[in-house]
Image 1 (cartoon, rainbow, N blue to C red):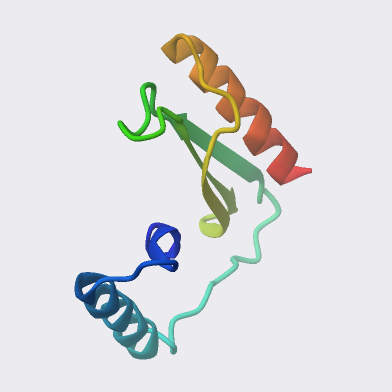
Image 2: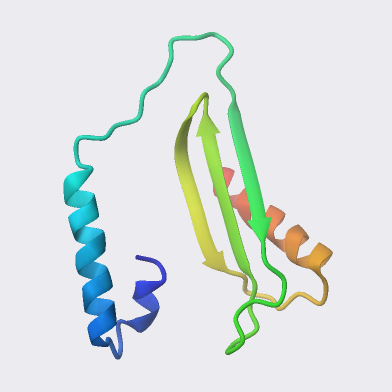
Length: 104
């Protein structure tokens, strides 16, 4: 849905088909749920990733991250970085900062 939202100004037929596919998937998985174990060693764990170079049209990098509480994913994110990084290390540093803001 995040990628499709980039085309809401001038949607094409392929975007309509993709959005219907996503809605059918959500309708078919409505009975899914998160399961939390009753263990004492449950921790919040986060992962982050970024791509350097970004998309060709705007050059922005993508930040991706997710958080697990125990064995269940409770949050995820994917967004364009505000700054254009000059190296892959800088892109990962920016991604780590953005994911840290998300966890707070």
